[in-house]
Length: 276
Image (cartoon, rainbow, N blue to C red; front, side, top):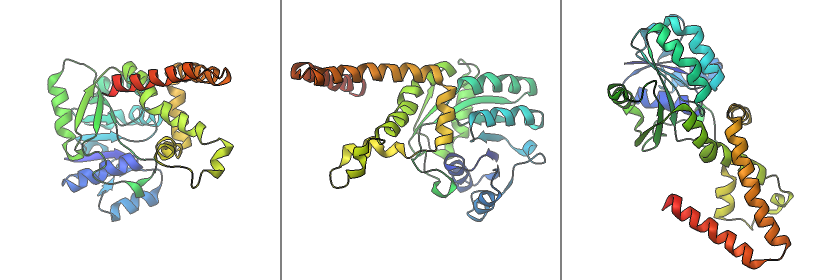
């Protein structure tokens, strides 16, 4: 199989390594020509994905910012061979699927929204690895939910990545859930580390500090775009969190240990309910 990959960051680079390791031909495009050359030297990429090679791909994976993915597909849709499977690997789905499903229908290829639930607080090709997705969940947003053959085709095509579980949902459901499970934790972590107390944390911090602040070390441009394009869902989560924090704040201000204990117990039980 010839696989085309747009973008050689952490996700695109790891995808490239996985397919190259499995013996497939990998063609790639990246705005940084030095990264592309390095990927070739590393054996993750065998050639360039451009106007002359797009038509040779049986699989095309889009691993750049959401708007860039949709722009690229609208520009190059006519060059993609009918029957080719095209997937994006972005963190939001509603806007990109809204733009890309019609392009696929117009030119006769298949587009499926995809979101690999794996990553790192480090970004860039140098941190990519072929086993990044081993055992990880993969969320799929297909154009039709009753197309069992398509879903099986996607699973089979993605075998080199080693995903452990596949979930299928609508684009709007994906974005609602991802605001809570992914985007919100990044914003909370990023806001938390801004406390002036952080300057003195050395020697006083352990696992809880590390767990909470790990994703504060993020790609600002990427996460700003993801959060902004998922604005309504993010505002709901932020407003809900603020309301909950205010309850803890009031208990502390009132010196009400019973109320604070009840709030903490409520949170403990909620964690048990949702995660077992």
